[in-house]
Image 1: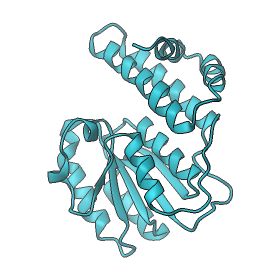
Image 2: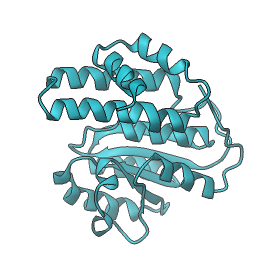
Image 3: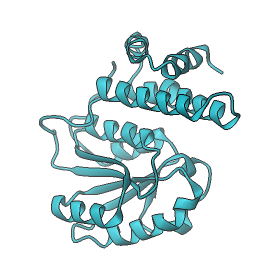
Image 4: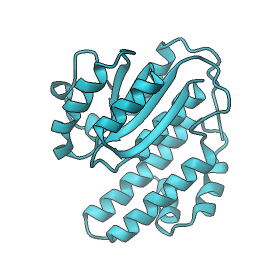
Amino acid sequence: MNKEVHELAGYLLEGDALASIDFLKGKQELTTLEVFDQLLTPAMQYVGELWESNKITVADEHLATGTCDFVLSSLFPWQKEHSSTNKKAMFLCPEGERHYLGLKMVSSLFVEAGWSVRLFGSDLPLESAWKAAERWQPDVIGLSVAIVYHLPLLQDYIQRLSGLSSQPSIILGGRLAGMYDLQSYCSEKTVIFQDLHAAHLWLHTQKVEGEPNVSL
């Protein structure tokens, strides 16, 4: 494993948000996408591997997740005061799904691209998601799924949200999207992102004006 990823994972496991932030601020040559893809994502994957092999406790894993969440909120905006486009996107995890950090990273990429973003995070019931979307009328609804037994519920979310009056595009990401072919759980129009690069590339195809190449 990359030495820098190991170092960052150590800070996250210690709950040391300040050290994590200082570490990432020292990577000013990297874009936000590169920080997410090369450092934060593999660091949290390593934490997950340690937990799965019983080398750390669930408390350790929760501490690392909470610290990573704080770091993301501190360094990467999930909303701007004024968006540079009239496009809107909302992001959520289906009910029961609590793995939201990847969703938060994708939402930050959308913010950088000038979109107006609403991040609802983990464990949002379908009826609440539908009502929020019907009120706000987003152009895009992003879903994330990491646990296999949430896949049947995912179908309900995609079917219901695809039928909104605003006819939003439905995008899907998360750990399972990079591991399996999830098309059978989706509609024909659902866009599946296998990783952050796919999300970034899709954003560039939307012809959004004013997208910066942001570094820390």
